[in-house]
Image (cartoon, rainbow, N blue to C red):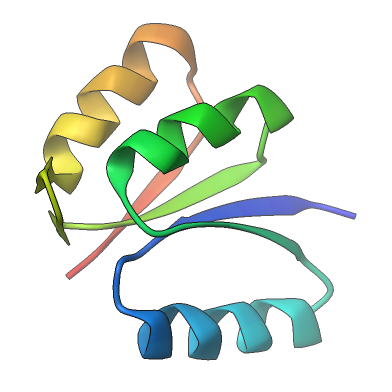
Length: 78
């Protein structure tokens, strides 16, 4: 089952996206901020969906850090 890491601080948005992805057969890993999302990378997701506006920083900074350790595809959520 393909894994998607969803980094989104808005719980309502995160829950809606998670439900839709799970209905399509994806396993969803969740993170409410960038630091938590970076910690989840050890689970080797097949795709990352990252919000642009996150508490304590922005999604672009998170993606820069992801790129230092992984080439996983990333979709930016704006």
